[in-house]
Image (cartoon, rainbow, N blue to C red; front, side, top):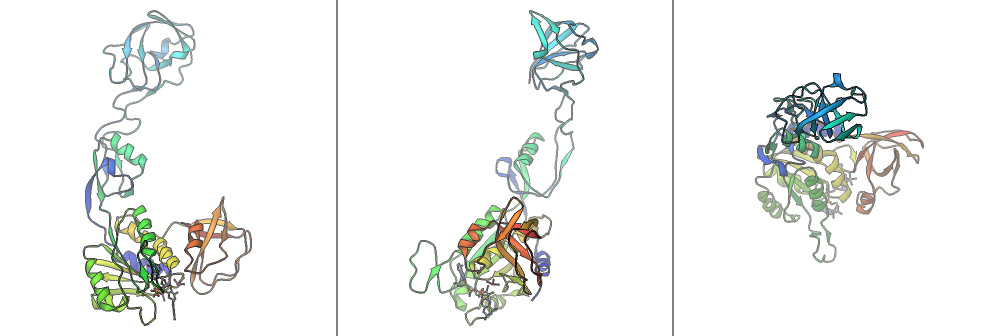
Length: 390
Ligand SMILES: Nc1nc2c(c(=O)[nH]1)N[C@H]1C(S)=C(S)[C@@H](COP(=O)(O)OP(=O)(O)OC[C@H]3O[C@@H](n4cnc5c(N)ncnc54)[C@H](O)[C@@H]3O)O[C@H]1N2
Ligand code: MOO
């Protein structure tokens, strides 16, 4: 058995970035930017007023000074002239500041009669002018790779890009294995249960940028599994679920190897998730998850999401860890790294009382996986522990 850290390193060694494609800005949120983008213009392109008011020269801005209004500058329609001594231009937010003016006095601090304004302030310490290039300049870059946030999309639009070069969504084939499984919505016969793992994993992977396909359930015999594996052709990642342990019907590793799997590891010192395996299988990477529903989902968070990130050029790093203080003591941990279903609220964390790896109801009520290192000693109330978010 290898450690979680070593297993992740093996996985990252298998990760090859997927191809890139051009994506319209309207579809790009959440995608991974593959190449830096360069501003095609300067923003703002001209000194612009940040307020509605009057543009004038600040050296003349004495209390009760008077100015003649000689024209108007609105957003999209500048004033075509120069502001001279004793003159002001009516100006609106976003408008180019005319030549000769170096401040905008807001209209609330001005009294206007016809073409004449009188200042009710002499404070021009705030110019109310946004200098050209205050936001960014022609040639400035947005770095890649990055997961494009709504703010990034707004910035890319402002830099005048209508489409962006992003990594393709990695295609993941999800294969349930087992004679006992039927799809949700079907009527299970005696001894059968519903295949839940593929659905939870599809939701998890697609929320993080993959395109996940649920394949037909492979039955516990070679030919069925071979058939379903052959349907995975073209996937960047094949994820099998179940049939990974030591029982007579756990044939996934055997069949995968006979179909070309070059196994890079099998069995990880973690709980749940021990019988995890992975390797290269033709042009795809294959990751075999344990069948217990919570084990499969925990492995999804601990291994599949970091692997997905690495496949889209992002940093090859474990799931982000946070820390919180215990509201209840914990017994000593055994030799496997334990990912305990837990609830965290306002920096305080409590492990669920039931930790069986078949309990999806417990997983669904948890919002964190509390991480116990191998052989961690007993922990008292108030001690700090690490967790990852669910
Ligand atoms: N003698 C030993 N027995 C077991 C060991 C061991 O070390 N020695 N390991 C245990 C551990 S830990 C795990 S985890 C499980 C994993 O076994 P498999 O990966 O072979 O999974 P299955 O036996 O196929 O299924 C386990 C369990 O999960 C249910 N299942 C399977 N697929 C799905 C699915 N898609 N959706 C919902 N539920 C699923 C299946 O019906 C079983 O109940 O092995 C232990 N045994
Ligand atoms: O390691 Mo298993 O995944 O405990 O249920």
